[in-house]
Amino acid sequence: MNNEVKVIEYGLGDNDEYGVYAISLVDEPAIEVDFVALNKDRILLARVQDGEKRMLYGPALIPNQAIVRYDKQGQKYFIKYSPETIEKTAQEFLKRNLHHNHTVQHELPVAGLTVVESWIKQGADKGQEFGFDLPDGTWMIGVKVEDENTWEAVKQGVLKGFSIEGFFVPEKEEVYNESELEAILTSLVNEIGEIK
Image 1 (cartoon, rainbow, N blue to C red):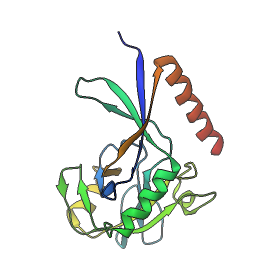
Image 2 (cartoon, helix red, strand yellow; image 1 turned 30 degrees about the vertical axis):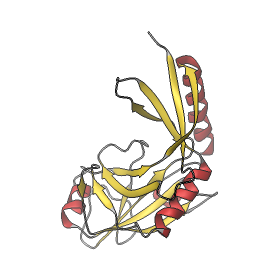
Image 3 (cartoon, rainbow, N blue to C red; image 1 turned 45 degrees about the horizontal axis):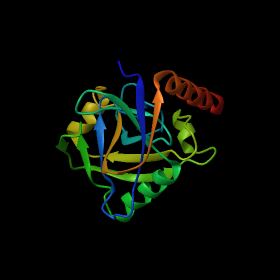
Image 4 (cartoon, rainbow, N blue to C red; image 1 turned 60 degrees about the vertical axis):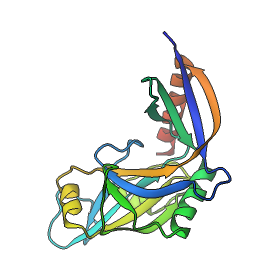
């Protein structure tokens, strides 16, 4: 049995066509962090009441986070994005006027969703108001939801987080044995814990 695991760092390369082209609302975000929905008083919602703001806040990408993927043979590997790639990706997404491009579960295009806020976390920021304690370099977004079906799915807890859709270039590949990778992931988890 092969106990080696690949970790691939993705970037944008030199092609202007690479990067994020849509944000999907999904039930299980690969970055393993859910968004939050706000009511008119900016209170985090468990159940949404009248006077909804219809705003969702959460991370789109977290730097150096190992995201599990499987190749065509079912072999597990990980991908990650550097803080520099994330910052450039966030800027290009808005420069290309793609803030209206959204899907549900990476399948159904949906209108009536707009990224109206976008920032790269540096130090204390408004994400902490919403209960997020994420590393610097995280791409945070705020999405206004005007589509009734999508908002209902958020309220029912069917859609829980953001997931990017895009094209990226493998820039660096490292191979670790499983115990080395486990030690690295444990170290990252501990580092994030210390940030809190």
